[in-house]
Length: 304
Image (spheres, rainbow, N blue to C red):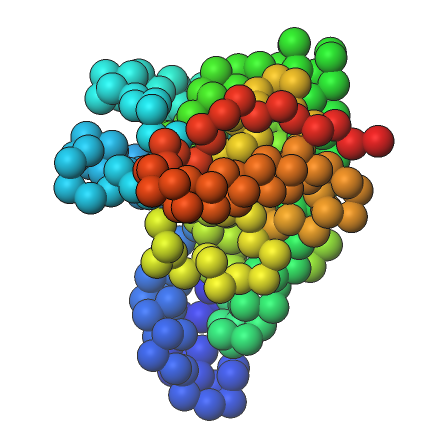
């Protein structure tokens, strides 16, 4: 809750007039407690995972409208009922695990210093903090994900997420409840190390989930803006990880590719791409048509 009764009091405190964004924030948040503002994250999670994957559902259903060529595993199609079942399972997880965790974790947000007051952060401050959050989450997630592909981690926990060898948008958070809790740690570390405004925290939570939905979309669209982000993995990169399955020792990173490259855990992916390039050249020479992104079985090359 803002410590001002009127906009004039807020302006006097700042020594200037409020910007349009600050005025909107004042009108919305002035009478809401910090706890209520923090709990908006629950609503954002439900909305993001209910709305963002819907275009992918339509694309999956409309197979004859020109989208088939962008499907990474074109021979695999998920029915509407299966996608709806996945959605229900994810929503159940949100209600039983993620939502309650959000409700009780507010004290940690106060401890690390996420603020709700004025002034609002600049666009550049928000962007800089979001970059830091993504970098910290990606590096931490890499090692946790790699651990989950060990014998114990995979058999006890991570195998649930790999039920989808051809991932779909709704399956981005589809996982064992323990994995959902464990992978919440990397998402929290960035704001804990570099705390910012609640608006930045909201954006971080929403963007991280949208990114996860994209990488699990099953489609490699050439027009996606993320293709212009340096070292960004994307759907094709993560799809390979699911395609190989439980034996995969490749492509552990959640967002970027640099960890896999540095630690040698992208060998299987690079080897497969090399084979596919050669096959494509041979197919083009022979006049045949490509059968998809993975026309042969991908034998994962494990890191040394």
